[in-house]
Figure (cartoon, rainbow, N blue to C red):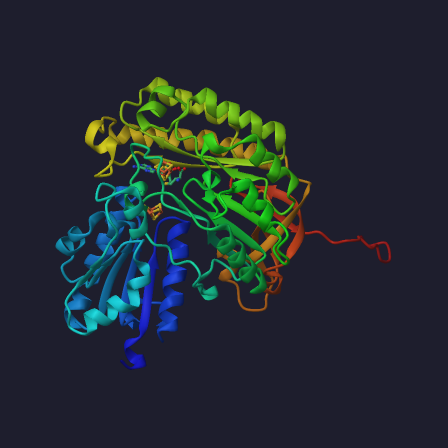
Length: 474
Ligand code: SAH
Ligand code: SF4
Ligand code: F3S
C-alpha cells in the first residue's frame, strides 16, 4: 500500500477515555505509516470514535455518517470506521443504519485497527471487532475480551504537550441502572501499578507536567499483585508522587462510597496530587438514588462530603446530576437543589435522563418525565449551580493563583501570531483562568492575580514580582 492510502482522519466524541483511545489508535496507525489529516475530505480512512452515554451523542454520529454517505458513493475507496462505545453497543445496527460503513470496532478491540483496515483493503468485506457482552461468558473471559492497549502514545494528539491522560482502570462493575458504560467498556479491571508508574515516567520525560488518571470509578482502583498484596488508589498516588518533572496529578471520576479517610489523607499529604475531586452525586433524593442503584443514600454522600471538608478544607468538589430520571417528582428534584446548595460544588455537569437500550432502567423503569419538565429542571439546577460557582469564584478576586498555562484561549486563538493573546490554564483545584499573555508561556506555571470572574472562569493578569515606581509614575 502506498503512502497515499494512509491519510487518516479521526473525530472523537464522549469522555476522556475516548480522547485517550484516539491518541492510542493514532499512535498505532502512525507506526504503520499513516499520517493524520484535519478533514474527512483529505482522508483515505475516516474514523468516528463514538459515545453511547446519551441518545443525543449517538444521533450526532449517525447524522455525521449520513452526511458522508455521498462522498463514500463517489469515492468507494475511502474507508469509514466506527469505533468506541456505540460500536460495541450497536454492533450490526451500525451496518444496518449506515451500510457503507466498513469497520465497527469496540473500545476493547482498538489494537486491531491497522489489521482491520488491511482486511477491508484486501477485499475481505466489512469488518466487525467487538468484545463479549456482559452475559456471554464468565467474568474472566469477558474481561479478557476487553483489552486496553495503553503503552502506545502519540503526544501530538494530547490536549496539550504538557498534559496527558493515563488510564489506570478500564470498565465498570457498578451497573447504575441508567448507564450503558458497564456494557460498552466491560468488567472493571485495574492496570498493574508498575505499568502505570512506568507510563507516567515516560510521560514526564516527554515533558508532561500534569497527568490525569482515568477510570470510571477511579478511586475504587485496586490491583492484586503477584505476591498477594493489593495496591489501591492511595498506594498508587504514593508511587506516582516522586516522579521527577511531574508537578500535578489529577484523577477522574470518583465514586462516593470509595472516598475513604485513608485516600483523603494521602491526597492531603502528597503535594502533587490536586485537591480537586469530581464525585458525582447524580441526585439529592434517596428514592431516586435507589432506583438508580447508586449504592448510597444522601446521608452517605453527605458523610463523605463532610469527610472531604474536614480533611481537605481547600478542595474543590464537582459533581454530575441526572434530572428527570424515572419517577423523579418535583419534591425529589427540590432535594437535588438542596444538595447543590449545601455542597456548593465548584461546578456540576447536568444531564437530562436518556433511556439507554440494554440497561436495567430501560427494561424496568418507565421514562415518565416529560421532555419539557426535564429541560426546565435542567435549567433550574444549572441556574442554582452557576450562581453558587460565581459567588465562590468572586471570593478569589484579589488573590493570586498558581496556573499551569495550557495555551491560547478560544478567543486568543483568533489573535494574530506574536501579539498579546488571551491565554488559558487551570489552577491546582481545576479552576479555569484566562489572562493576557503570550504563546511562549504555554506549559509554564505562572502566578496570576485574579481581577474578575464568571461562574466558569477566573480572569486575571500575570503577577509582577515587584512593583517598581519610576519617576513618580506608578
Ligand atoms: N463513571 C462516572 C460517569 C460516567 S458517565 C460516574 O460514575 O460518575 C458521565 C455522566 O453521564 C454520569 O455521571 C451521569 O451523570 C451521566 N449519564 C450517564 N448515563 C446517563 C443517561 N442514561 N442519561 C443521562 N445522563 C447519563
Ligand atoms: Fe456508569 Fe455508574 Fe459505572 Fe459511572 S459508576 S460508569 S454511572 S455504571
Ligand atoms: Fe461515552 Fe463510552 Fe465515555 S459511553 S462517556 S465514551 S465510556
